Image (cartoon, rainbow, N blue to C red):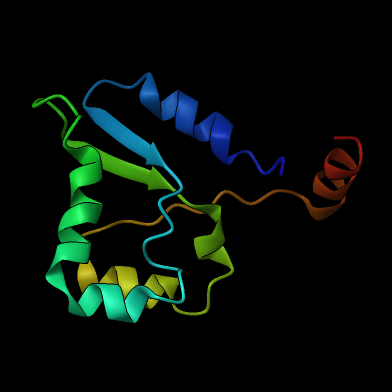
Length: 102
């Protein structure tokens, strides 16, 4: 809802060696623990980048709900310790106004 994450995703798609996917919600779903215990869940998650060119250096995903998930950051850290997180924040009044006029 007008937070700027889609704009960031399209900008990243234009950068060479970056390949991403939209909102897999792997780390914020309530079934995460059950899926994570089974390594096939992690293999399915990593398979999201199978379509990326072999020259891809930086795979990324866009899931805004990770910002409000109480467990997502810890899950990412435990599962993918080399991962880097980027949060897109917006001035709250402008964000509310933009959402109101959708």
